Length: 421
Image (cartoon, rainbow, N blue to C red; front, side, top):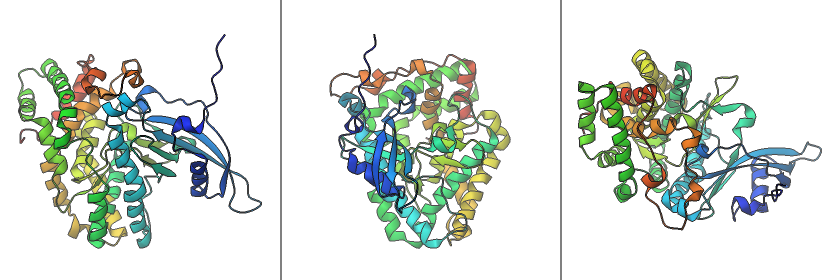
């Protein structure tokens, strides 16, 4: 006979997720206070969140005005792992601090800037969170559950079509436009949020020892795929030139070099972080743990090389860039800035020539991860002790078995300017 599960408590989510937090969520949703809550059985899989734990919670609340119906709020709560070894292995505290700062400061300031200019078509593709908290141990981000409105992710293992990719690129362009317009019109405040409230969580000199060995595993997988699909070709030699440099140091250079075109980046533009509505063109971006201040080409190239097939790039690469720049230029004009002055198309082309190699560097991680079967995803809570474990000992990535998967990885290098390391 199975022992019945004990009912979950709020403290099972986080010691800092309290009744007061529930009241704050209800107030954020337009009500007065929380009158009840329940935590339903979740359907999250192991692969849904590598750096965090996920919970769903349904709240009922007292309405703001007498006579109104009680509020019902369905929320997703992302929390820092409670397993200390897992938390230290993946540096979860750094990623949560960055995301909490993004929601609590950066996004609020970008939206405040936008609201004051009252654009005719405001950017709304990132939902603000209800409440976010960070102290390195009890961190959480509570957000509206977008699934209830018909939003869902595309498949990780399959590329998506042109129309969906154009929607993503247009949304990225509109998001980047908020940075460019605010930088022109409120430069001091913009630089304050960009430099004080956004941090590089992946590629920095101080982090090389944490990540570099795992990067070498990814490089070996890419070499294996190239050697099996394009042995002895110019494409293989081109990739070898890219890998012959210290790739991690090169990624540090690409992420930390800034100029007048730098923007707040999403930072983690693989397909699971884009949600598509099931019956309208609406979409949403989620997960800002890797948000960074850097070239717009980083988000563009990450998305293009990780989320599209070679056939789509061959036929529609310019269409994707047009969707991006069209969304950006339209948003800039809507905010009172002139795209021909602050970011003409020639500047976009220059940024791509200088920084698009970043997408290939990220693709050698994101593509093998996207091909993992659920059975291949490790149970990260089986990490024992409190000490950090080398990532390559936890994530066991092997050479890609399928030709289709290998071609997704090798074809990423076609047309990319890799040799200038």
